[in-house]
View 1: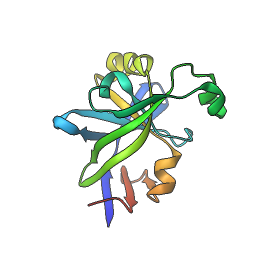
View 2 (view 1 turned 120 degrees about the vertical axis):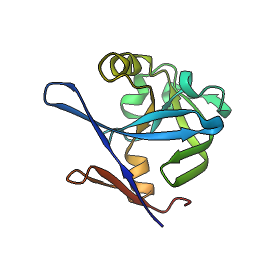
View 3 (view 1 turned 30 degrees about the vertical axis):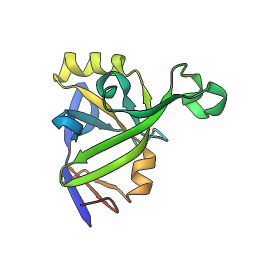
View 4 (view 1 turned 90 degrees about the horizontal axis):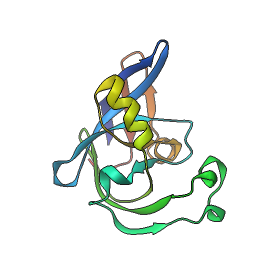
Amino acid sequence: MEHIVDIKIIELEPNSYHLIVEAEFSNYLKGFLIIDTGASRSVFDYNFLNSQIRNENVVKSEDSMGINAAIEDMRVGILPLIKINDCTITNSEVALMDLSYVNEAYKKYASIEVAGLLGSDFFVKYSAVIDYGNKRLVFSGANG
């Protein structure tokens, strides 16, 4: 099933655009996901979602590669529900870290709360495409 989600484009600084989509989690908790195709793996804010995570484990830095290797407090856990528009993703293993520094900027300039970053793993798994002209994210392969 193909899913089409409206993208919001935020300009935090002049000529610096950030793409976001709204998501819902268990217990009707809502937040925004930054589309970050430069991130190899999607990451979620454990401060925002800590009450929803199951089977949480700390990842040792030697088990991590790339830029994430320098992050001291990386965790993984199971997120029971991620709902993006009409698409429901259940029981997803996700990377977790403190995204307070990201939230500070977004709250200051855009008055939104960031729940996480959608990385390249999402785009590969769900064959996602960003349609800049129509300001939408198109993807398939997830539950409808």
